[in-house]
Image 1 (cartoon, rainbow, N blue to C red):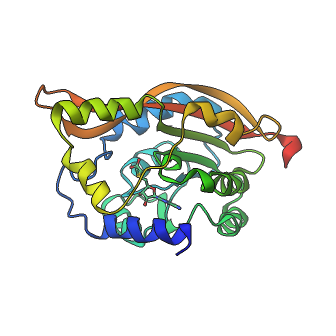
Image 2: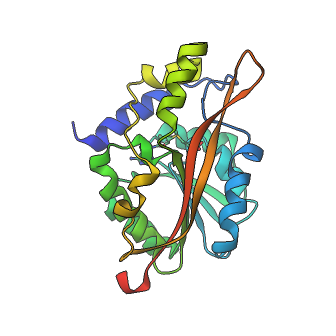
Length: 242
Ligand SMILES: C[S@@+](CC[C@H](N)C(=O)[O-])C[C@H]1O[C@@H](n2cnc3c(N)ncnc32)[C@H](O)[C@@H]1O
């Protein structure tokens, strides 16, 4: 099985068996605690007249919110089941959803030919890919950005692993996380320390980076909502690298 098929099999299984029960999708935070914090960081860098592609948009919760702030938003997903949920639950006049594997640069190129340069939003997607696949994903990202698009990504940071270890030791495995593992989804490794090698400065301009968190839907017995340590980064492609 190719690595791309591995992602399709596990994520399609994950999304096609989701029931919509609150709390089922571990990272499915209200946009007020997710895309809104992200938007405040990248809005000033991104041309709102360009379309925004939410790469690996899942069930479209964040995509729908972002559609309030960009002329056109397209949520893309490897999982047809996720696309269907997003189309049903998070429709908006200027939002559409489609299947696109971020590991298919030719498909990214075809989308670029259709919509032109695009801003990109990626929340919790790159770290799901095996490190061996990062370069291919970034090739797709580069093709979608073109010369004018801005990329915003937010991913778990190097502090996430010890954070999870402590969380599980103190409170047990959150059900939403157990469900991820049941579908053979095994997070790869990515950290803020990899940014320069993944997005080399001879191809990308780093516009901003810093610590952040990915809010989950899991509340601890203490009443505290679990927020996973994360980092954000904002990039544009260097013109000379086109
Ligand atoms: C942790 S979820 C985040 C979903 C969404 N970004 C959010 O914040 O709600 C990761 C998403 O990446 C998608 N995904 C995994 N591999 C992918 C690939 N190769 N191409 C496109 N999407 C992919 C999964 O189906 C899943 O919906």
